[in-house]
Image (cartoon, rainbow over all chains, first blue to last red; front, top):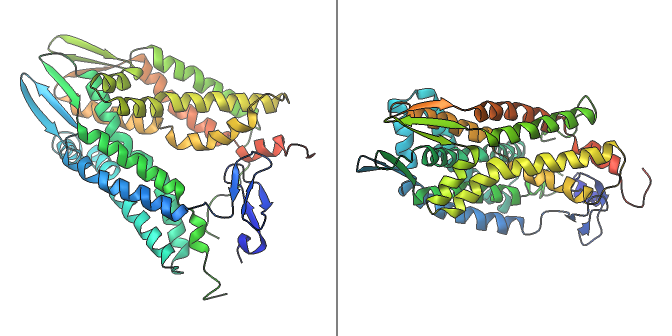
Amino acid sequence: MRARDVGLASCHTCGLLLHLPASGHTHCPRCGTPMHMRKPNSLNNTWALLIAAIIAYLPANLYPVMTVISFGKSQSDTIMSGVIYLFAHGDWPLGLIVFIASVLVPLLKMLALLYLLITVQKKSHRRRLQRTRLYRVVELVGRWSMVDIFVVALLAALVNVGAVATIEPGAGAIAFSAVVILTMFAAMNFDPRLIWDYQGEDNG
Amino acid sequence: MCGALLVRNPKGGLDRPIALYSTALILLLLANIFPFLTLEIGGRQEITTLFGASQAMYNAGMGELAVVVFLTSILAPALMMTSSLYVLLAVRFRKSLPGVRVLLSWIGHLEPWVMLDVFMLGVLVAFVKLGNMATMYTGNSLYAFMGLIVVFAAASSSFDTHLLWHKLGIPGRKT
């Protein structure tokens, strides 16, 4: 039994529970936002944003996120080499956190969204609870990947001592923040209620 | 059925988030006026502010990233705090102020873009990365910023959108 079966839906913004007209679209009387039985074009939008994020993921990891120019010598750092540097020179707990936030999270997030999209499209009814939980985790942890962008911004702001040392942000940083933002939007566009549709076919 | 938190009733009603958001707003102001971090390298000092991080991105020709950093570390938190306070005060003193509903519905959309805590992790990483090449000093703003993260987290968890929507009610209908 879903809310949809009795024509009910709650507003995304203010949570008001309403009887929706047969068209499935209306405006929330309390906060005025458009309301839908399911987010419109949820799958298409999520696919588009996810594919864009996957494309941006390549330059994000191949191009340097920053270049350190020190005494005339320049050295470029990618996301991965930055993590390796932390493991080698800093302390490994911080390296581990950054590794999780900037390498593991974006990758797993894109794989998770891919998995959610494919299982919903195949009208799968397996592991619904786990998939819903997966979605919540994806929505929650995505923003932490932004940490690398902040590091680059802070380093560029601090290390600007002319000939002695300068740190410049690289093209990889733009691509990387694009990955983070695109996956955040992709997760927002996905409607987790789709996971629970198509259940009348098997277990009633 | 999926185990998500649906409703909770924070203690303190509306006064607690009002107090906490006011504190957070003052801390955000403090975090923006004093030096954030100071770096000493080869006898030269480089002082940066919170805004300096986005400014550096802009100076390096990366306007897009400057916008992203500014939005997530300053603008989104500031907007979220001021609009939350506006809505809270309007409901608390039963004044019908314009735009309360619009602002309240935007607060939820703004929340994922407030990345104060992520920014703090970035500060830690920057500290470690520069540790062996220069000396770093913490500025007063950094302490204000740390306080801000704690107060902001407390404020947003005591901010109950369900309660506020309930108090606002449906226009043209008595609640």
